[in-house]
Amino acid sequence: MKIIFLDRDGVINTYPGDGRYVTSWGEFHFLPGVKPALKRLFVSGYKIFIISNQAGVAKGIYSRESLGEITNNMLDELKEAGIEISGVYYCLHREEDNCSCRKPKSGLIERVLREHSIHKDLLSRTFFVGDSMRDIQTGRNAGCRTILVFSGKEKPDNQLNWNVQPDFATADLPAAVEIVLQV
Image 1 (cartoon, rainbow, N blue to C red):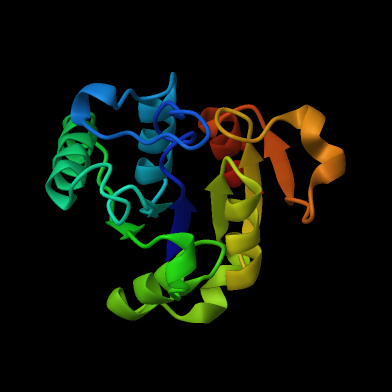
Image 2: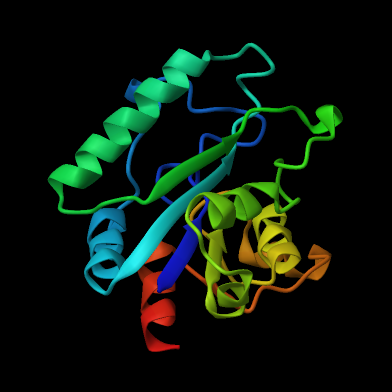
């Protein structure tokens, strides 16, 4: 079995900006090349899981219903493109809630393993692709290999400030998929 974990905002869709959220379907825009990249993963036999912090719900910025609408529309559009996402997992908590599911903690990944009967030994061969150092730390905490993409929050010129190093760093999800399929 081949699996991959992807962050959402800044990896799959346009990053809304620091401290901002995608609050409605009208604000959700797929990044260039994402659908063909996801299709390559899917046809190569990958189970694709989206792992994302969405604290805007707990903060009252948008509702669970709005998040559900965004997710359903995203999944419908991907399905139309011939891509099946195996699961979308969100942490809806704020940082101060100190939950086990908020990245950089690995609670959502552990939940995926339980719910899909995936053995944790597979994680050492699994990639976590994200656009922030929080994503990279999440992948590390779970025992995954990591790819940092520069299509969202993190920028290459901030490298000296990174507290953890990704296994790979690249422009965007299409370039990350190239790495995944070659390694």
